[in-house]
Image (cartoon, rainbow, N blue to C red; front, top):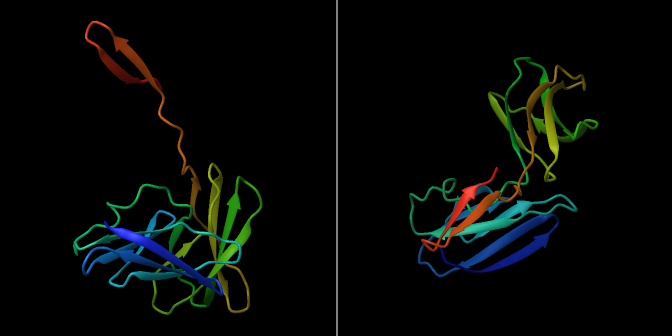
Length: 185
């Protein structure tokens, strides 16, 4: 992995990152907020960000075509969640309304996903999430007239990207000159 430099450009909400690698003919593995996004042969990737949004972008370059980008992901915790669900069996669904609730507060719409004919599985990436907060999500099928169907809970999660440091006890044995570390939980 030999990224020498990053160049970042922003225009109209589209952020483009270009890297310089010292490797010959590398594969580029792109991560946004700790989650793998894509693999490219070009040293450039772009993302759309809403006004006021931010993202941490990382790139790993390698000449190994069999490189596993998930297993070898950079250290870090995602600041977003990807929600997955199976389509509604109702034939009149126009789109899915995605709502989010933080720390038991009120539900707020965070997105809308259009129905694609013959697609069974859908996904949605949430906006940036706050650390140490409880989040719940629900997805509601909505017909062309705006009538909402039955909402389904997708998942709930407490975001912990910065875990507490491990607690340990240290002892020194002067007879052996050894230091021992033990779990103090």
